[in-house]
Structure formats: structure tokens, C-alpha cells
Length: 340
Image 1 (cartoon, rainbow, N blue to C red):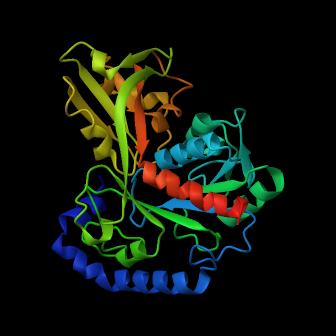
Image 2: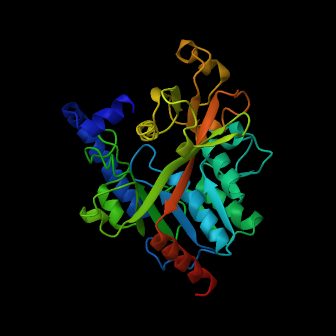
């Protein structure tokens, strides 16, 4: 967690000095919502050729959007639909936009999250900073009958028929102020306008904003060696008890990843990098990694290390469980376009 994130969630007093700027961000966000959003409510989607489901959040940092997008794409595919996914492709170095991701596109061009989504869904994945342009590309060049947008809740130029907001119940909304004095991209009242609020982890359902929310669980199940593909279930003590593990994360919320190891019988050395950091072998050759300990990271980080990973490198495999009620609700929404 960086300096500003710590201040937001500790509710540091000096942040009130930034309040005028936060009020300006709040004002602009509300005006953009009213002025630019063309498809404000479920049912007002006559101009959409297919359902567009946006999975986003209202705070900075990671909340679990990408695992949910992957789970939804798999569910819709199992239901007989043909999903496609669009993404900004943050920090990608694409030769052009829009860019359709396939196995021939390197991670550095596609971006870590789009590459991960493609590998785990084999659905068409299109990246473009202009998500509306990515949507047009999907319509013209794929057979998709439903589109999922990985993030983009605030991208109001993107028409949508269904909105999902993912919330981290451990961090919630910090001091509940908009940027830069707080972590909010939009006011908390935005949650009242989305179609579904999804809580990534255990939460207090008595909270008025979460009374009609859905659950998302992401549980670690195994370690997979990035170099050899060897898989070791966590239930079977993948390493000798007491082993020191170098846990590496370049995530919006690295503490969520580090806490996954709390109940394991290992000593953890945490190494945090900026979100979407591009790893290189030199990062793992300094004194901090000189002991030759196992290096464990997420799959999102692991795909960026495949070119140089040796036998020390492992990625954490997780099991994602989505509330069946949400899956049912999403399927019913998509069916409205097939059989209105």
C-alpha cells in the first residue's frame, strides 16, 4: 500500500487540505454521469446490438474485477453464449488499437490482465484505451453475443446495459472522499445506481449499501511452478514447514495477496512493486533474493516472468466462487436480448 493509500484508509487529518480538489472531482464526476451516460437504466438498451456488462469499482486499487470477469465469461460460455471481453490494456505496448489478443500477442503488447483473461477464457479479448472503439471492433470482427468490460465503470462513452461494482469489504471506501483527498473515483452514492454490488470476501451485510449485494470468494488452492508447470496443492504443504518464501506482488492492493499466506506454516518476506510493474530478471538478482528461496506471486504477475523464470518461481492458483444468484441474474439479463 503506497503512502497516499495508507493516508486515505487511516483518515489522516492533513488530507482535509485537499478537500477543495476532491469536491471539484466529485462535482465533475456527477456532471459527467448525468451528461454523458446514454444508457442509464436496465431496459434502455434498444440501440445496443448485444448486452454490454461492465465490471468496475468506484475506488482506486484492486478489488477483484479481473477474476470476476473471467468467472462470468466462463459461466456465459457454459450457458451457450459467445462472450467477448474488452479492456483498456493498461500499460500495454500494443502496435495499434484496437488490438485483438490471441496466443501470438506477447504480454508486453497485450498487458498483463488482458493476457490473463485470454488464457483463462479463450474468448475474444480486445484492448483499446477507447473502450467504445473496442466495443465497435468486437461487433464488426467477432461473433460475440455478449460483451464484458474489464473495468470502465467511469468510462461513460461506453454504452452498457448492466453494471457490476466490486467492493473490497476489508478496505471499503477509506475516508469516503473523492480523489485526491480520498480513494473514491466517484461518490459512494454511485452504488445505488449499479445493477449489482459484489463483495470480494466476508462483509457486514447489515451495511445499508450491501443489503442486496452478492458474494465473491477467491481462495488459494495450489502453487504452480512457472518454469516447469509442476503443481503443488496447498493442502499438502508444498514446501518444507518453516521455509522462507519471497512473496512478490505488483498489485493495486498487495496486502490482500500477502495476507493469503498468514495461515500457512512459512516465513514470509513481502516484496511490493507498483501496480502493473514490468518485471525483469535483474529484479530478482539483488541481495533481497540472494537466499534462493521460493518466489511466489499471482498469475497476473507470473505471466510477466515466464521469459526468464527459473525453478524458484511459483504462481498462486486460486479458486473463484461467484454467488449463484448473481450468475442467474446475469444470465436472465443476457437472455432479454436473445428473446426480448
